[in-house]
Every structure is written in structure tokens, then in C-alpha cells.
Image (tube, rainbow, N blue to C red; front, side, top):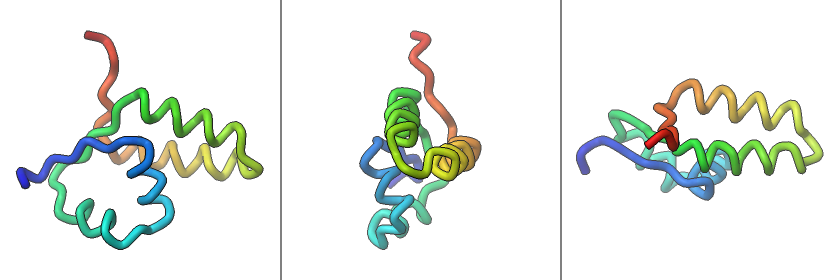
Length: 73
């Protein structure tokens, strides 16, 4: 592995759930990339949840520690 990870929505959800296998892979990464599409999916799910504010705060914190890849061509 070259130390770079591109995350999808399911992996971020696993990270939020502290999935051991995913957390081990994340610990080995030098850089983490988060596509803006996945970020949008996470926000959509947060807005439909019963804990909107807490989930949005968690997503914001995670996004701040990741390199967000935009769809700007």
C-alpha cells in the first residue's frame, strides 16, 4: 500500500462505528481522501437521522481531517 486511501460512504460509516479492520487500515494511511459525493451522501443521511446536529458535527470533524476531492473537473 502506498499510504493513500480514497474512502467511500460505507467506509466512513464503518469508521464512525469503530470497525476494527477499517480502523487498522486507516491507521496505516499517510493521506486520506474523501470524495465530495461521499460527503454529500453522509450529510443526506445525517439530515434524515434522529441526531441531526451530532451527526453533522461528526461529519464536519471528519471532513476537516481529510482531503476532500471536488467534482470540478
